[in-house]
Length: 116
Length: 113
Image (cartoon, rainbow over all chains, first blue to last red):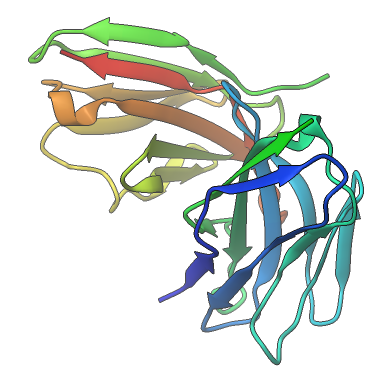
């Protein structure tokens, strides 16, 4: 079955540091890949997505590139801010043979804390 | 600004009591998902609906959990009887058939004593 594996957390950084959160996946079809973010006390929000190999998703300074050869979708940001402190989830949506119900498979989440 | 709403936001109850959580999906969305989030298990998909019909509820304990969509604007998740191990945050999300983005509500934080 489909699965998503994220790097172990938590991740603690100083403001303006470079961020990488690793994500790898296994899927039977041709999945779309997502990063969702969860701020304290809130639900998840879509951060960015990529729907096919070599696509780059980007939003709010975050980027991730769909790498089919390494089955990866690592999240990066060049300079983090305190306000980026949150839990980050990698996820995939598999086409399941052409029937797209939008079902997502999530990774376990990575807690990011950014200090001033 | 269209949002998924969930009620109640917080619920404390005693073991054995019935718990009902409600979700109002974004108007026009026709897929609805229920998730449970705990520190130990992370995010688990409990059930999902398309056009109000249940597509998959294999993630849900059948003996005590039930999920329904009485109409297109309301989804419910019931636990009867509740147990301490049900303590978690329950999220509802909605989306459009054929589009993969899900929009999450703020969650219901449940504590069963």
